[in-house]
Length: 258
Image (cartoon, rainbow, N blue to C red; front, top):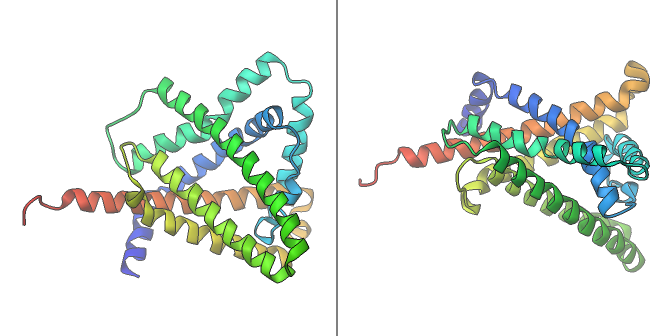
């Protein structure tokens, strides 16, 4: 509990919530271009099948809309749109590393061009990985529902979601670190991020079941809920990165000889 309180104070006193808000902005800038390239490279993917779990209930309508818009844009995309969208799709990962340099208080800053190229490589890898995972999940769900009861299938889905979330958290934590961070160094913060993701996703599911945001926000409710969901999830990622940075700083403060 003391560590969690210290982590919260560190998050609030350093005003790292501003970093979370900035990353949400660049995530939104990167999301639509990435979906455009996903439609170009992979083709049509049924987002509703992939986001059918209750954890994604709050954001499923907005993701479906963005995916539909990206597929329509892909059918008539020109060279200029493709070039600018590829650049825009790297914004989140580029600024994630820059945010990591601030959080770790590091002077080891990677060159802008190299970082952009690395971010572009990650975007392409993420697109291919997402396509493969989506295909496996959709095909696997059809087989599981055919052979197993719905309750068991939902448990298997939950395990898969937790595993994928942890894998994503590990990759993002390692990429955000401005120096080489191995798996064990990123483990604690990634576990914390994954736990927060699951808690808040479940909370949003309960909120959507018992509340009616459209009564307050009207037609803008879908966008507002999506933005709030993204901010909380990115804040959870930033908290995990901060926790890893605190552990790294503590290890570096230890004397070589006792």
